[in-house]
Amino acid sequence: PNVTIIQHPLIQHKLTLMRREETSTAKFRQLLREISMLLAYEITRDLPLRKQLIKTPLGPMEAPILASEKKMVIVSIMRAGQGILDGILELIPSARVGHIGLYRDPRTFIPIEYYFRLPDDIEEREVLVVDPMIATGNTAVAAIQRLKQTNPLSVKFLCLIASPEGIDHFHSYHPEVPLYTAAIDDHLDEHGYIIPGLGDAGDRLFG
Ligand code: PRP
Image 1: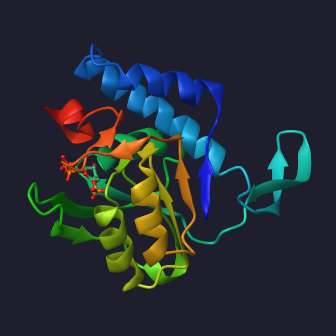
Image 2: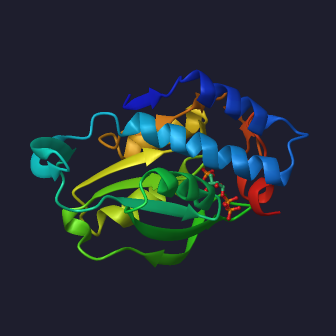
């Protein structure tokens, strides 16, 4: 399937610190910001470049800059996507930002939309959707479905931890959407939690 596990040692190390039960909210937030910068660095490594004529203080040169005409869009799935978004924006400060509000009904695990807002000209932009967890995959499937209605140039999905069940579910609906994750955990429990996972990312981030 269309999944990349990002293996960078700093990412793996920080993820372990985030998983630990004793990690405080302040530390969890800081780690999520750091790990998100590293993830963004890794997944942007093949962005196309073009040459631009510039002048340094000592003369002209043809220098590389990002080729895309339009700024990329980071779409945060609230609430927990916000933590990844903050980290990525430190690395890509000019990115545009969209928000999708979805919460999981605790009994049925069905995602319910409460907010949806994207920047203008979405048809001309590349989109990266971010959410720390893919558990059942229902949230990610719904978010991408909703996004596809707006016809963006391209879509990728970035998470921290995914379950095998969630990945299968995601790719049965959106096989062409590349999925990037720092880890694939063992399984889902009957409450729809990733085991061993890191608990409820939204709660650990916001309380
Ligand atoms: C969590 C997580 C994902 C979703 C994953 O959010 O951040 O959005 O669950 O679960 P799924 O793959 O089974 O759909 P939650 O619904 O707890 O909302 P919150 O971030 O606002 O706490």
